[in-house]
Length: 271
Ligand code: HPA
Image (cartoon, rainbow, N blue to C red; front, side, top):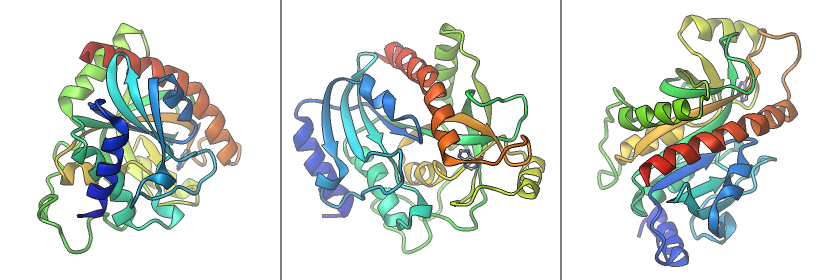
């Protein structure tokens, strides 16, 4: 059995009759959303065979399955970043596990910096498309044809139908929802002001260190994916102060309240 099949078999047994329809990946400062899940079944990453274990502060590292907005979901409280030193093979495991569990789609959330001065900290941006500016690709290496094709179509990475449903949900609760392009850099350094000026000319609206690898792995195994960025700060050079991880966690917590409402409203409409 492949690693993700071993992880999926373990999780499936723990879930019993619960069949999660959506997998939700929580970014920095967004962990509280997991605590809104009703009748939770909690599984620590460290107990799941073959599953990676996260190292960054603010990420606790557990799966929470249950219902949100009356829909069965499975939530990752804590995700895996390339800058932590995880291999892409490890980062792929949760995504492929969700596919193996029969999830319809994966909802990726993250904390990111804004390149648009009008999109202020605390805003939420629906990811329309991304720019992989990491200089690498998570699928480099031998391809496993039983998982997905060698060359993956990325014309419509983020699912148009689910995006529409998210926009409707935002309208229902009168939540302003920005839309834009997310640019992925590996980190762990934040960007320089010169880099941010360059990325603005490339058409990036939000910048961050996650999400794109998972989105690529999802499209590779034909799992639908959408992405939501919570804006924690204006990107380097767009505001006077220096960037800190603490600020990321604070603004993320603020936006998390709105993001929870948005996802609950979206899921209620899917029930
Ligand atoms: N840059 C990169 N990643 C981030 C930022 C940023 O400004 N804010 C939160 N995550």
